[in-house]
Image 1 (cartoon, each protein chain N blue to C red):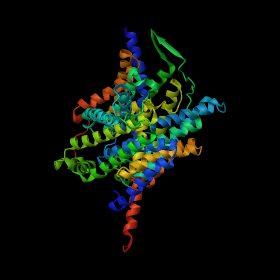
Image 2: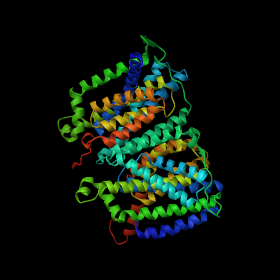
Image 3: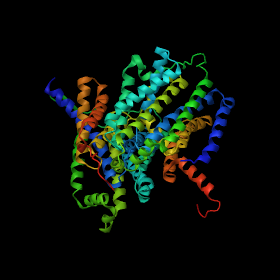
Image 4: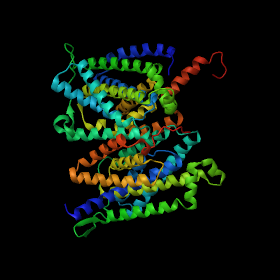
Amino acid sequence: MLNRRVALTLVPLVVILASAAPVLLNRYWLFLVTTLLAYVIALIGLKVLLGDAGQFSLGQAAFIGIGAYSAAVITERYSLALPLEILAVMVICGVIAAIIAIPALRVSGLRFALVTLAFGELLQWFLRENKNVTGGEQGLYTPPMLLGPIDGKSQLTLYVVALVLALIFSVLAWHIPSTKVGRAMAAIRESPLAAESVGVSAWRTKLFAFVFAAIAAGISGVLIAHVSGSISPTSFGLFSSIYLVVAIILGGARFVFGAWIGAIYLVLVPALFTTIGLDSVYVVLSGAVLLVVIMVFPTGIAGVLSRAMRSRQNSPGKVNA
Amino acid sequence: MSIDSAIQITLSGLATGSVSALLLLGILMIFRVSRAVNFAQGQLGMIAAYVAYAFFAAEVLPVWLAIIIGLALASILSLLTDRIFIERLASRGALGGQDFVVTLGVMLLLTAAAETFLGTQTQSFEPLGNDVLFEFRSVILNANQIIILIATVVILITFAFFLRTRPGVSMRASAINPDLARSFGVNVSRVKAVTWAVSGLLAGTVGVIVASRLSVDPYYMTPFLISAFVAGIIGGLDRFAIPILIAFGLALYQNWSAYLFGATAGTASLFILVIVLLAVLPKRFLDERHEARA
């Protein structure tokens, strides 16, 4: 974890950059940055589930999908304002996660991954089959968010909402490891047997992490639905879930900052390659980059950064910190 | 329904089952020797079929030679995955989930390479016997299905015998206790290399067979890979017979549910079964008893 001094310099930097962004950026870049913030939230959920609790999920994109489709239906049919919409999505995702947890949390490791994969595939099937609700293969157009007197159509408003939510989730995830449930997660991750023997409930701890990840993904989905204007099943399939796992491991699954780096890898890097006209290079490169990063930096990019900062801070007066 | 259509559904289910069983066999072999979960297995098959297609479609090579080159490539890529990544990770100490990420990375890399260099359009492959039909009463099977059924049975029996031969025992020994195996003169590193190469060859074979049945695009192997993994994970990746039998069982189950409840129900019923199985099976069947492990 990045220590407090680093945090104190990073946070104002992020805030300054974030408030300058809309002024500096055009519509397209504002769209990209908002999408990035949405993925930061989903990846923070995955950071807690994989990095803190050590559970490998292949269903995170499915929860983003549930959030996105619920958001579209809720805004279109029930005209709920954004806070209520987010609340509804949190409830929907939380309840679905708790149901999936019944089979998923009985097992661990690969079997847990398999249950989440099965859930994701069932969602794909549901989205494709129920054309009258979900629009089937073609998907749905998503209406802009409703925010009472404030203009929900404005890209800027959405950006601010996404930024606030991403910061809230960052702070939450930052605090989790030092709370009771966070320490229980670390115990479960390192040794489920030892954790249970000192009275930590593996079931309750994993349930917390799984529901937290699902709710984060759901909120991310709400933002993605509103920012992209249309959604279809393929964006929430197995490959998207795999890319999310890859992004958080690449960024650094033990670090909140890793979720931000992961989102940059998912959203900004491909956009940059498209801008310079090399998008076909990117797809090949992204697999290759992943392999190199894992071989060279097993703790992800954030892991390397935090180690570099720590050794620089410790170096004066110490031999070989 | 008549006896004939029941036989028909069962036989074509078994033919599909043999595809995922062969894919799974490669995954199990690799897990046995390297303790790595190979997510790239399906895409190795895809690359073999795609490269073979590229050669014979351009009419530079005859079909058989193009297929041999595709199979060789899959085998070499599998070997390279081991030498460049997995062996190196293993020599640093225990694989802590990094094997997943590496093989996922290889899978994404192969997918991307196919999309970039060979295109995302669906291409039709050589039929390889799909157009030769055999009819017994009213049960219709094509030569391709018959070949894969026979080939799978032969490969599985050969493999079962192989496990009892000297190289087979060295393979098991290197998996169970590499240091002890080394002290008995087994070249563990070479055993791993050969296993990865053979597994790549199996992946390529499966890729070409599936391609001849359906058609080729960068994603056509995904459902077969998922079926193979479902069987492997439910049955246990550290065993051979049970997961392979489950692979056949799942294919039969899927074929029957597609017949009974309509074509789109096949996929859904598989995943519902997975969730229900893991929710109700007693923990001792799942190896999920809490035991202290090293």
